[in-house]
Image (cartoon, rainbow, N blue to C red; front, top):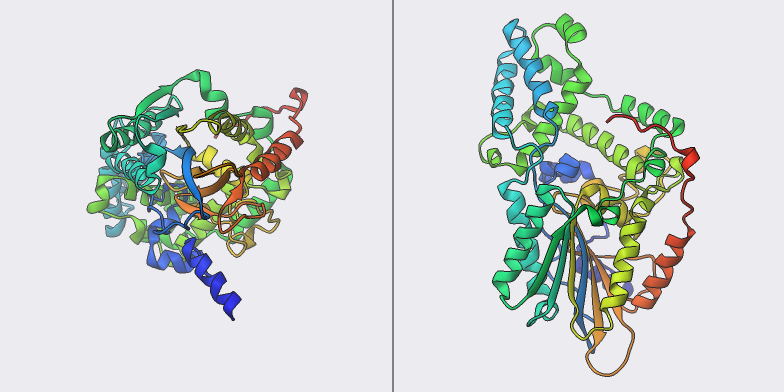
Length: 441
């Protein structure tokens, strides 16, 4: 009983529970989680971090984070639904509810005009708050005239995310020596896209499994009937599956914009429809970026250059007395496979049955909401010699690693380095002659 109590207290301290709610149950309490990668950064669920082992203090942070909340990237994300509903309205094929949905879609389209993919006000706020918490949680890392090395991908929403974070840090400590950059020079590891490896995501086996899975979760007939007043028109003039997907994407991303204060599109969907839409997204992201056994469980290795760079930079920084922090700002298509490569919590699981992903704990919105981040926090002995320790935070919550812990979430850096360098070295690059033509998304 005492062991069970201790385990419960440890899990609660790390933001976990023995009996975690299922996604379906979580959506009842927070429907925004169903938005997958459009889920607006919620902040850490773990308010109090596990104290460091006696005699240790934090002194270096290595970080990679996604940009904050943004508008949708492609103009068709707004235009397809808008034009489909406008055409139906011109033919008097919309229900009164359909007309009101068109009104809301029109508002969303206008708000995003000439802002496709750009950071929203909420996205900027998220990065200021993440930086503020980082400073408050690890003040010794940012003490005095320490160095902060920050890099971003060349995408403006990432650059602005970086600048908001750095402005917040500067306001907290004007003495910080900040170097920041965004250059194609660093894109080989900041946003790695290896065509031969990427083209292995979707092979005949994964496509067949995903198509069968989607068929089991096809659930949008009622949505179409609520929008249109003519069944024949739906069957012959409306791309129902595409429209459903577009409307669900719009519904999911409202939470990242200022229109979240005045409208919603979640009222289009029942709880079952929301769950089925999310299930399809969750499975698709797992195939594309997780250790999916159907495509060789290789996709997390897209971030091997990033992880190797983080290890090498840590090697050069850790001998310093006060190394500061290395901050990197990029995309969810890097954070998700990085978390999987590091095997944080349940991210490294190999699951053959896509239906079992939720029960196995592979849940996309827990990995990569807007503003998602991985932080490696390093600790040194306050006095004398001793092992350097490291702990991993996923979205600012302490995460487990596939290593033997010294205590709680703290691991020996030497163990971390040995394990992951061996894992990185085990990857055999796909020969160029196996490269296939990349499909248009």
